[in-house]
Image (cartoon, rainbow, N blue to C red):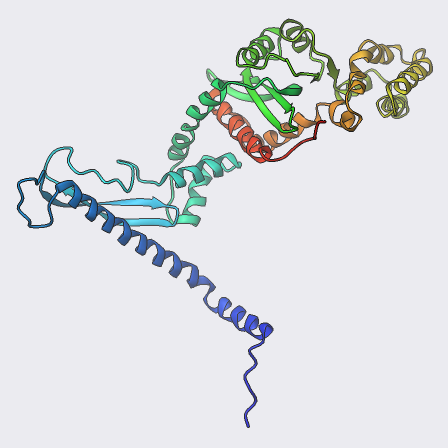
Length: 398
């Protein structure tokens, strides 16, 4: 008697793997063609039904209610999420401005989903020229660099809506910082500052509230930005702390817009300034002692550590000690908050992570073509993270 066939799971996986190796070059292509051809038939059938409804009469049928007459077909290509549909038969009618298909937007040769893909690929860091090559691989249809640029400009409306929206005055912590970007202007490359406001709400959710491409981190530019936040609803009624890098222009602007809110100076930025005033032979030991100040278990212990540190280093490096001493009150402001949050609130690291992602995206570009291009990329990245954080809580408040 013959041995029974082995149809175990392992054996079936081996058989499937062999078949896949034999046909892996063809299976995907066959499936794509099958789906695209099926989609073409579906669209053409839909348009035939549409034109019949428009005419209010079947083919060759004479009726008084008939509004127009058929006039053959025109052929067009349509780029869909499944691939390129070639020679799609679109019915025509005799009257000017007669039948218009409803299965796709007039004059549009791409689905909106494809435009969304173009934007996402571009935002991810692919150049406008290379986007065309990516689309050729994905959908067997290339697109020009100008097409990608045109599609990305559709983000301008979204940016306008984002900036005009009303803000809820329920932010508990506000992080403010800026990042430098190179932008081409009037035939030369200039540096612009992207000012960013990042907030944590009462319910623990975090959000990049707004941003502005400015000339610098001057008092005027920060004042314009903060006043915009205030006018759109961020009055500061729930704010407990504002975390900054200590830029003079920002501090002066805060004195005008949010003068009564406690401020926290970023320890990372401050220790960087202290390090610049230290001889190399003292840097490691001195900075290690300074880090012990913000690592203390309480405000009282932190003050003790600070006094001890000052006594040890004042005679050796007076400028470094003065640099820390003059801002010690704002450097220790985080101790007034919930102990669980101390490590989150003593630096601007929360917003710096976003800046790292922005640098990663803009590094291949070296520079932006103009301010609008910079605004679109920054907005896209911010939207991506706001959506990512939408259902997450940064910290839970009691």
